[in-house]
Image (cartoon, rainbow, N blue to C red; front, side, top):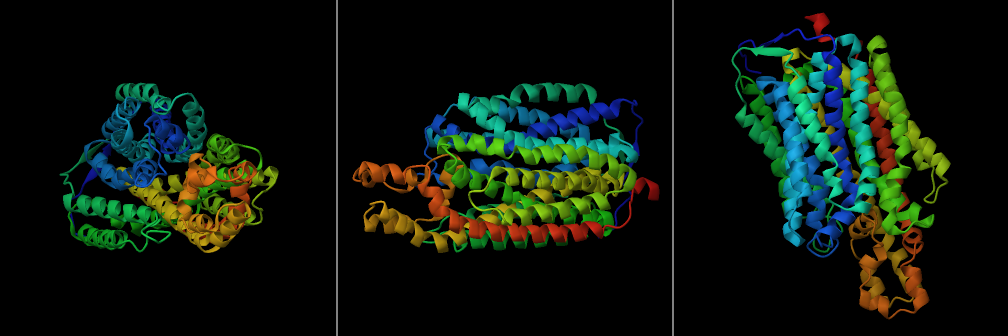
Length: 567
């Protein structure tokens, strides 16, 4: 890397109680940002009804994809840039700006005036504005906490902050379901008072705890190649899981192929730029720190292991388990969130405890143990049948939550403890970008596995079931060959998949008993379950393997390391 003039950070003294102000405000900010990452997941059916769009109609799936993934994509893309800018111009200043932008985005979403395609585009744009604000919050919260707390208390602080991050993502499922049942606009309104309070509170109470000394330069070339390259790559991976032409998925789509190639080329160019620029955006030299490298590698593998699996578990509940237990498809989004709550309980128990203990005994044992617990949880999921008894599932969710809690806070604390104070903002952004990219990669990977399995195994079973129910053979063959993506999205959105796949005119000519059977709660779950579970078990095995490799990487981080003690 090119040599540069020394840039340092002079720490300021703050009042003894300031650390608790920093913890409470950043925890509120992270809770709001994480909650909104998932709150839309359960409330999408009500939102689409409110703006009068059928997301499963031809040509409308793009709106569904962007509303579902746009927030995460823009957040993941901007985190490193925002972290570097915050190191230059002040972490608290940019964190405050993020709170304000996020609140503005929430207000605009609540006030969305349009309907139809115009309304969908407005929602997507305002959702991206929200994502920009979330990027500032995510990229600065851990850096602000690391600045505010002494090394002996950082694990405890990170544990409480991580509860907000993981707990918010799970609470979003439940809160979104409850609010959407009243009115879809409340899904966005709920963040407005919290955002206004948090913005004013942060402006009045948070303080910069250090001043950067030395000439600062913004790495424009690095920002451009990284931002554009990562955005193109993530969008290509996202569109790869959508049908293309006569194919069940879009991996053969020339635009997807070109996007993957172009994205990778730009990211390779970004690495070369960062190795030569005077003050790089992405501090590649930080990977020479063993604790930083091992912590981010294990964090990335953990994100790949669990990111897409939460989505798959929700589809399992909504598309198979809940209908078989008497829940209507329209009610499954809310109840899926409720039945996933035990995972949050496990995290709530272990998150702050492992953070507090890691302050005393180091991160390696807890982070490694958390990943090994995740291995156990994923292997236990393999043993469950499609229509499982809930008690074992509850225990497995708690095990997975305990594993996540044991890993998250100690690993984050170890990463942030290992870096120089002047690089904490960019380090926080790098850590969050790596983890968010892992989660998006996970969704593309596991969705592709499940879709590929369904495309191979489902058509003959579905065809036979439809013919047996009285559907004409020509229509049964046509429906059986439709891409299974539509059926999964229908179940995920709380629609009856069969009513989405079979034209109303065909259903109208069926005997009443046959029509009731095909559209009932049992036909789709029982038909799709064998093919879905075969693919899902492969995904569980991959998650277990990823978690095991993450445990090994975590163990290889070495003994406890705190930068201040080595300076």
